[in-house]
Amino acid sequence: MPAADFFTISFDQMHIVTVHEGPFELSQKLTQRFNQGGWSSECAFIEERMEIRLKDLYWLANGEKTVEVRLMLLSIMETLEESGFRVYVSLRAVNCGGGEPDSLVCYRMRDEEADSTYCL
Image (cartoon, rainbow, N blue to C red; front, side, top):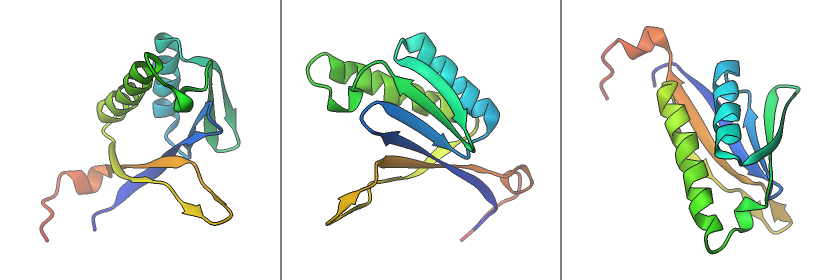
């Protein structure tokens, strides 16, 4: 497999979007998009992650709020693509004792690998 950079975006506690070990520039772009959309109330870097706290419990949305959730997810995807990233996989880890939040594992091919031809 070619060399790539990976990071995750998780949807935590019904009102937080967390970018874990993502590039600083991408985290800033996501923060701007959430501010422009009017979805965030606060953003902060905590250790190696960016937490975007949302104004509402969007993950429990129904009715018209579901449209906002889809716009928010579309905004995340657009920001990823503009920065050369793609979603590798979407995960939800659950066991009998609980579970982890939904997460998007994102990746970008490294420059030295992106220009070369990769065949299976």
